[in-house]
Length: 612
Image 1 (spheres, rainbow, N blue to C red):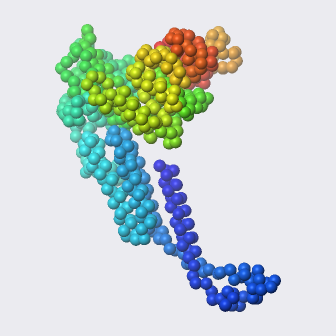
Image 2 (cartoon, rainbow, N blue to C red; image 1 turned 135 degrees about the vertical axis):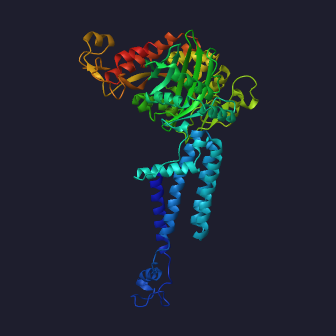
Image 3 (cartoon, helix red, strand yellow; image 1 turned 90 degrees about the horizontal axis):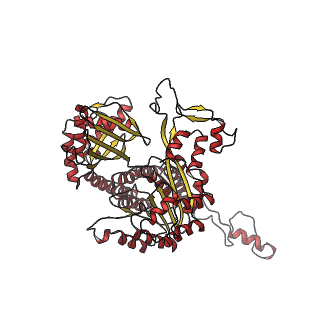
């Protein structure tokens, strides 16, 4: 947005300067001339003889008087530009807010953008500023106000903007930064405590969700539930497990893909917490044996998460697992994820192709969603037309300039929501690139394979532990092997390894025997790194774990004729892996050793991930 502001400022100044210069060239009546067209007092003769040419040149030369300038009002230009800056800020907020709250940004962006831009140019064309500028203000305020009224009706009370509570909070935050002391409106008891907010999401309707949320706020354990989930966020955990027994509750956190035990807590504390969480999910809090599943939403430190709660009775009590998934991808580039530059070039070259089938794959909870979105953001979505198909029960974070058509699975689905019908409508639009995450059945994949051969690029995802298995997983959907082999062009698979904590990792010299086993020449690597073996104190950055965050391992299989032949004949995964390595594919072990050599992860962590 900063670039847009700078460009807009330069454009306004340039346009105004050119206009000022052009108007300043307005001519006044020329000086008086005689019957020969010469200015009195100028030297010259009649246009005949050898002096004819010079006389003609003199006659054709007319002297103009330059105007005085100042025909444009810089004050009016400044006022118009300031309103333009305000519009840029609020329009960017509308676009982001629509995506955060799932409010059809494809509809609202053109309304807010097109209305103002049209009247902005009209203002400069009208000769009356007193008419053009008020019209521009109306064109700015009307769509923005309409959107705010609409979105406030769709969100919960605490998310509404320009309300009395919101304005008081907004002014209080900014005045407090300036040293003033202004208290925001008094919070109710259920808002006190850590900066975390719950929203219900598991009910059959929004009305039911509001009922569940209000009921949960009245329970004894509501603030305890907020503290429990805030502690989970503070530990960077992606899941928390509560093991209820007769005496206590065992607590475990999944941090960077590994479970870590915490100190047990008393049931008197966590029983009300579980009751609150079940109510907000629309579950039965009294049922402690049957399996129950529900979802709710969390906003912690202005980041949205989706929480999936699963409870199941055990011999000793009850087991509860709450898994967290961020609504937004936290990474921005493939470099952040750990993909090597050379592999990035290969992958983007494949995605810039005019046809083919590129398959992304990974095991569950290993970053496939993040990688797919970042890769889509790297593609050229402005000169080529992209269209996506998604299951409405499993939506993904929107990607700019990729419109989405949704389908539904199961019995009794309306015809216009059936997957095959949705694909047929999409094919009639003839997009250049078709994106379908989570390939669900063979008939849909067969239709996509036909388009990949006919000159369209298809991007899909599936769950698998490596590239070879991803190919067989697609065939397991009962896709014709020859059709799939003819269309597939590349497969990307990934796994996640934990990063060593940069603050507490320790170096050690690898033995010659270890280097020989790993195939590393002697003397090339001086030291490997690992978590501290006998730390004197707990590291404040990683909490004593030795690892902080994760990085991805990738293997990219470019499908050649040999691999296509194996796919078409129903070969096993080992045969496909051998053919891929013969074609030059780097497997996970080779990619992981590069990270070990760079000190980004440990050899023990790599071995743990490769055994999965």
